[in-house]
Length: 244
Length: 244
DNA sequence: GACACATTTTGACATTTGGTCAATAATTGA
DNA sequence: TCAATTATTGACCAAATGTCAAAATGTGTC
Image (cartoon, rainbow over all chains, first blue to last red; front, side, top):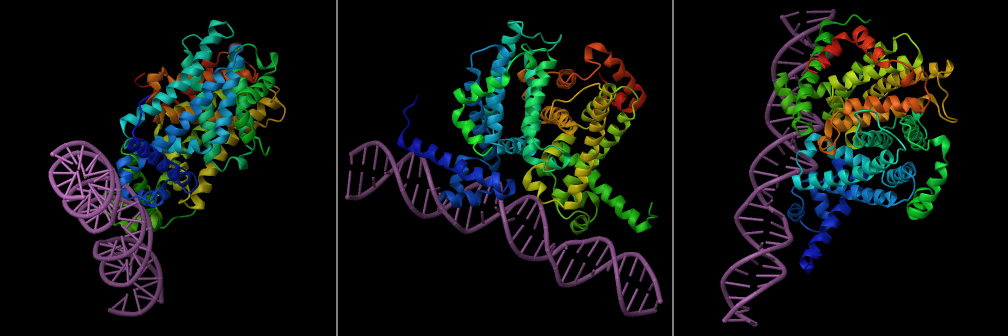
């Protein structure tokens, strides 16, 4: 839109570089390893310059969360373009959701981190709103499909439940599961060896429980999964399943 | 068991006091507000003494998580004592789970915090194991009920799924939902106004999806809920629903 | 090209906090 | 009573966040 000046371009480029430096640090070495001195050093600028971009360390973390959330939103949008019956489209979202989680498992660590009140409270309202907008966008895409289902009489929600609350359930399940898979090293010892597969099963059975037609038993959703992967997410699917 | 000496009693008492000081700070003012100087001051001992009890700040946080997890374990055990068909007993666990979440919503913030890798990595293996034991205990209680269900042919799991993986689903849903309810202030704006009720519905429909008999429609589970509350959790239920 | 003015960058500095440890105080038991 | 053991202390160090006056760089004008 706006024709940026060279200075503005350089400024944005450097901002991106800061995030590119911060991400691997926080992912591989954790929150405590991320410090402004180190970022400044790798950036080859002084600390003061980093503070010109981000008023505090926490703001960088939020910016990282926003970045992967945008990635996720884009994948959800692509999945939502799938043409078919409501539950098939929901299955497409499920594919996008799992592919995202497997491509960026660290997203859930960063998101867990940014939600910590003492971190969240130090971030700017502007970026908070940006994260909220991303969330809202994802949720709207999914609840739109629920609306489609209700409209097409593929499903009827229990009295008093709105589509957004059903989406909240799917969201809770995936957020909880993927967060634990990323941070709880006790799971294998507990007998949870294939978490992703389990989540897939739980989501299908939950939708079955709500009576969303066609039920899992009435339709070949694995076929839909294959189709979505090859047609809408060929690169992502290849990356995720290259060694599986 | 062991007859403690006066010194040991005093030591343990002081340890408890440290946790009692730390909890409200971390719950109300957050991670950053919790510092060793402050704890020492309120404890009316020097900082060195606090460090005699806990080798680092992170260890205190883990100790807090263990404490509430033990509370939760105790409630799960009480719920598991409910005598009835398998799904009724699972419903009893659901009651315990929700009561716990409403009594200690901050537990999920502390647990989110303690899972952050850079925090987790600073804690001792001894306490890590203690948390894992608590988790294992809760999970075993619940998977025991799933076993009962399978044994009594109230349900049959999909091929390849073990009871622990079903419990993982319930756990993910509750952990994800209660964590978000505790930390995501955007939910009301998204239309999620009664999160607890939604979780209840999702869990029931998920179990329905797995065909766990008797289905929600075949049995009055609200009656079970009432019974569990009044008979097994009268104090907790009164506390939670005093103003509802 | 010289100059004034605006903008950006810098890194020394103040401050806070986690964590250490030699010195000190208190307790114990013979 | 007194030596030996144990517990407590707080000065001290290191590391990190965040600030800001000064220096450097860039921009427009004559």
